[in-house]
Picture 1 (cartoon, helix red, strand yellow):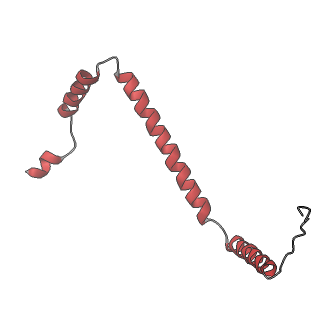
Picture 2 (cartoon, rainbow, N blue to C red; picture 1 turned 90 degrees about the horizontal axis):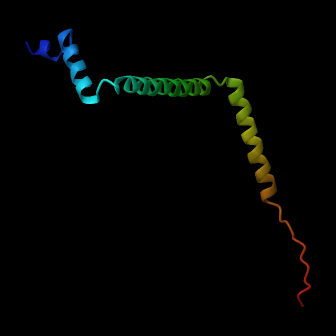
Picture 3 (tube, rainbow, N blue to C red; picture 1 turned 90 degrees about the vertical axis):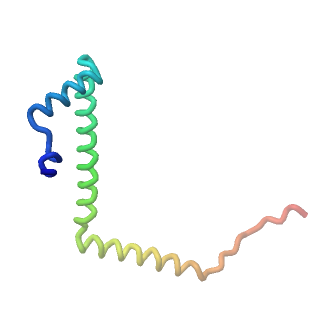
Length: 97
């Protein structure tokens, strides 16, 4: 008995809901309300599609690409460690005396 009360609105319930919406917003505002909700839904769909595409592009990196990136990082680390032991001397001009 309780399950039948929780279900989706049907027939007459939709008409009552529509009448309440018309009373609250007014008949003149309904097209604007529908248009703005459609635009919001369209923007939401494009943003979620963009996020999915970005996520898919990140997961599609091949093993070869990962290996190349690892080599590049290793070379960068090697270059940093090679120059870290050197002492660089700076020429100064002591003309303040």
